[in-house]
Length: 206
Image (cartoon, rainbow, N blue to C red):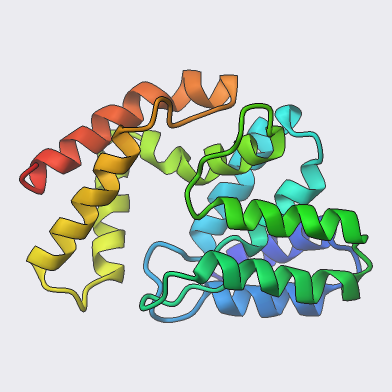
C-alpha cells in the first residue's frame, strides 16, 4: 500500500503541483477503514482509465482532478456523497491555484458520477464516467471480485436487503442505451459489461 500511496502522490503532484499536503489528505479519505471497493486501488484504476481515454477529453486536467475527488466523500449511509465530494473540490481547489472555470468543471464532473449520464458531446463527462464504470467490463473473475468487494462494503446490510438494492442498480445500468460513451470505452468494455451485469443479476435471483 505504501508503494501505491507514493505512486498516487506523484500523480497528484503532476496535476496539482506544490500541493502534496492536499494529496495526502485526499488519500486519507480514500483509505478510510469502512471502504472495501472505493479505495486507493479504485482511484488508481480510474486514473489509469482516464489516461487511456484522455485523447477524448477537452480538459484532461479537469477530468484527472475530478477522478481524485469523485469518491473523496464516501458515507455508506448517505445519498449525497457526490454532492459533498463536489463541494469539497470547490472548497479546496481555489486555494491550490486552480482557476475558477476549471474548479467549476471539476465539481460538475464529480456531480455527474451520481448517475453516469453525460450529455451527448460532453467529452469530459464521457471520459470520467467511462473510466469509473470500466470495472464492469473486466473478465468474469475480475467482475466477481469487484462485486464481492461492493457486498463487503455494505456488509452491515442483511442479504435480502442488499440483493434487492443491488438488483435495482443492475437493472438501471442494463436499461441504459449504452454504458460507455467514448468510442474506445464502448468498443473495449460494453459487451463484457452487459454480460457481467446480467450474470450478477441472475445470481441475485433476477
